Amino acid sequence: MANTIEYAEILQRELDKAAVAEATSGWMEVNKDLVKYRGGNEVKIPNVVMDGLADYDRANGFILGAVDLSWQTMAMTQDRGRAFQIDENDVDETGFVLAAASLMGEFQRVHVVPEIDAYRYSTIAQKCMEGTNQAVYSYTPAESTILKTLLEDIAAVQDIVGESVPLIVSISAMVLNILNNSDKLSRRLDVTDFNQGDVTVKVKSLNGIPLRAVPSARMKSKYTFRDGKTEGQKQGGFAAASDAIDINWLITPQNAPIAVSKTDKMRIFDPETNQKARAWGWDYRRYHDLWVTKEKLKTCRANFKQAKPAEEST
Image 1: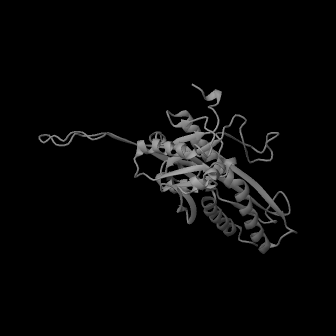
Image 2 (image 1 turned 45 degrees about the vertical axis):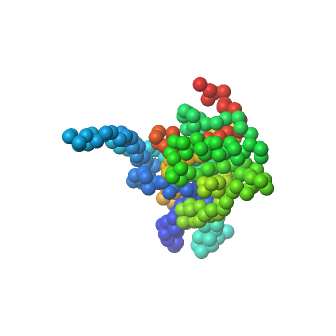
Image 3 (image 1 turned 90 degrees about the horizontal axis):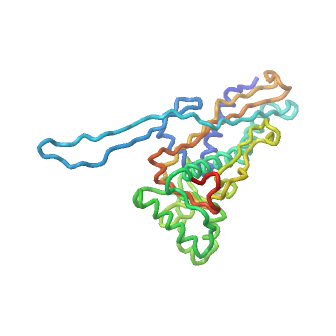
């Protein structure tokens, strides 16, 4: 009988690596080293607040400053999964390994990765909408204004963090296309190496700042993540909410978003064990979430195409 535990461990390991490499937001998982993860769906997120400099007193020495290092226990709110089966007459033991790897790779590429991206970008967008001066509304990208507007937003972030802090612009692919298709504007862009997990990809950059192109369907302010049970949601997956607006771009320091994504221990059942059918079966479950601390949120900026939704107005 197949060593299903070994199959599951191999699949789980490869799916986790692929999720980081394939997601346009995979670079956010580099920051997962900033959190404490002990397994399951909980992580501890650090938030650091420190006093600034004070005058040195030659008689009394240094003035003691306060350091507030707090760890917040956060639950990964995105707990998603699906079960799959392949009839035992369709594949033998060897065929199952190949079929499962192929099917799960396609499932992750078509369904899982886009959903993770959409959740992360919309989460950052929502936080910017709730912040103070972190959101710009009602800008329709056009060749005559896009470069000026983008540079102004970058300057607004650099005015807070300085020019030495690495920034990343997550930009709608359709918006980036305006820059790429302009003979005049495209000359301002360079091509640079961008590291994401174990993969290095080529991306456009502006003044040394990477422009990470994101499919426009993943750049909305709000989504409905279907539960798979409710009528109208049985197909699962996600869709833009009815009141969602388009994100032109998000500007963040590279270390601001903290993303964690974990495949829970996969379970594989051979036809003799599977209680539901004479079939190979496996369960896929993924925890994931994204956080931006209060201090880091002040350094982020979102640019939207439409006006601020009425329900978000103050």
